[in-house]
Amino acid sequence: MQAHAHNSSQALVIEGLVRRFGALVAVDGVDLSIPAGQRRAVLGANGAGKTTLFNMIAGDLPPSEGRITVFGEDMTKLSPEKRVLKGVRRTYQKSLVFGGLSVRENLYVAVRGATGPRLSIWRSAPAQPDWERVAELAERVQLTRRLDEPASELSHGEQRQLELGMALAHPPRLLLLDEPAAGLSMRVNCPIRVVQVDC
Image (cartoon, rainbow, N blue to C red; front, side):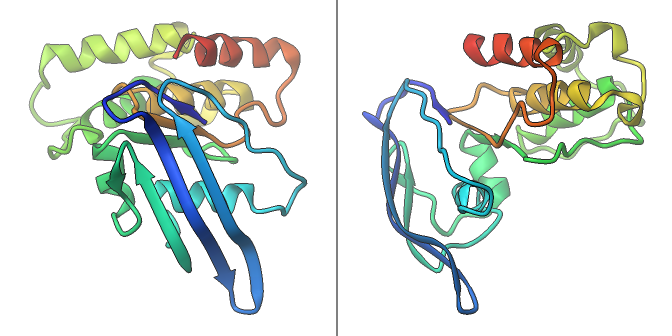
C-alpha cells in the first residue's frame, strides 16, 4: 500500500472494518491509519483476509461494518468506479488485463477510463496526449517493445508489469498492490520493484 502526499495528513483511515461471509468472519475489526506519503505492507498467512481487506478499500466488496476514509473523505459506500476517479488504484492478486487487446490498447483503456469519459479505441483518433501517456507508461513498466502484442501473449511477469502500468495511468492518491511479485522470479521481479520504488 502506498499513499501519495496530499492535503490531509492521513491518506487512509480504517475504523472497525468487518467482513462476514455468512458465519465466517474474514476480516474482524481492523483499525488502520496510514499517513500521507508513506508505504505500508499488510502481512499474513494465506486466508488471513488480506485480499478481502484490499477488496473493501477498493470498493470491490462492501464491508459488513466499519468505515473507510481516504484523505479525509468517507469512501465506505462509494462504488469502485467512483473510488478510481478519486485516486484509489489497485492491482489484483491475479493479473486482470484484457487478453484480446494489445499492450498499447490496455494502457489506453486505463488512461481513458480513469478520467471518466466514454472510450472508443477504434472510432475517431483520440487526443495525442493520451497516446503520449500510453508511451510513458509502457516505458515506465518496461513494455515498450511489446506495445503491439496481445496482452494474452505476455509472460506472467509481463502481465503483472502491464497491470501496474494500468494502475498508474493517472497519478494515484492511494495505490494498493495485492501481492505484486507473487509467482515471479527475481529477474522478473526487478522491474516491478524499480517501478514501485519510483511511484
